[in-house]
Length: 113
Length: 510
Image (cartoon, rainbow over all chains, first blue to last red; front, side):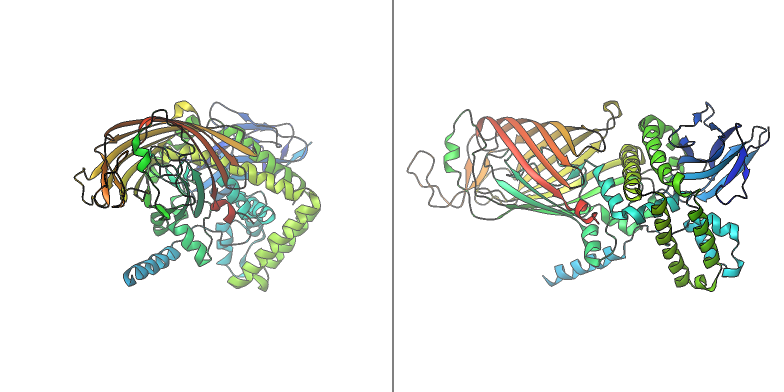
């Protein structure tokens, strides 16, 4: 199953994908200690929490924000929010060093009809 | 005297060398901007700059919100989440409202005025100033007095700052002459006839050190997630509120034409000679956050309120997480305190106190259990033959905070038990002209033993403390029951009340 999100050339979006496809996201980090506390798409609509610890949402048409709250006990830990593509691969949506004062990550997602 | 002054200056200099984490750049993801700063402006790619300035990045969101609502507002909100600070006098003072000393001292300066003794016979009103060495030194030095550091962020402060943060000291003053007006003794004694307050003003002083023995980072990383989910059961709810509040701002700004124009402008400026030097880069990023705030305000007329909402929700999340995870992250939290009490009519007394605070998981996230154990001794025995050790004390108090995280007044209900064993007859100061109780026989010397004071004192207390949100004000009102006081045998019921002001909150204001 290929990844649903791809980088967008539209300056108003970070990623784009066809609506209404289902996207699964997760987080990993060098210390392996990072985890998602909650995710909303679009806020305040909560994403679906999966038993495996990943989170899912269905792409909506137009521009919508995906918000992810990450917790990581190691400040500065290289952390990646990824799309779980279903074929054993992942696609990095954002890579950053975890900042305890800024634990949220938001993505602008353009849903294509 | 000269040695003390040199020591104080040395300590001040040492504390000014201590530091906490601050953002190095006014705007932009710190690491990504640092990478850009290593490149010449023309080598900086558009995608790298766009990535560094993306408003959806957590650091950038935080910087924008701090710029609009104020970083100190954020610090103040985090302060609101705490309830385990020691602001008042020691329980052995003649004016105190709490039977236990709490586990964490104020981070800068606190002032408390309290009326009514607990186990002491002579009841007074005292005012207590409690200071934290590093907080006051930083304040005097003009540096950021207490940046927010997440409970697990060991690198946020320098090792020296961490070491000094635990040290604090306090001094209490009598604000009125002696009175037993709040006491209702049920059995009389002649002993109270010879208690006559003297005029000295200092009621006591103390020094203390708060110890936090933290888990190693590697050990923390292994089990943090499991512990977090078990302990912070409201995390998802609090987290949802944070995401919703941030989403309110970003959903309006991120897809606006003005934001697209803003990022194009700053891609251009960061690739120009404007941002070639370190100072130039700082200047461009300072302009960037100012302009972004204007863009956001144009898209969101309620930006100020929305930014304050983000800060409130984020602080609730941080405050609850730090409070709940502290007992896991700090394997052991305890304090050691030295008290020097200067009660009227008695020789000065010293006490060594051990304080431990825990948050029992079984009692929920808003409960705090504090235990104290101490031994008190006379500094001078004068001409008496009494034991040097005056008494030993143990006490336990359970606090439960009520009200939501956004409540204006947050009451805390406390219940406690205090046990004191008077080892020997109490020693009191009497002028040589004083007469023995009920007689015309003059008492000898400047000290005298008081009869029949040996034995246990049992004391129970119920207390309600009202914390006023965003003010640093705390108003404790307590009712204390005891089987006797230290000098007089007989049941006693007392009212204790006070007002404390934690100046940490004042310094956190804009």
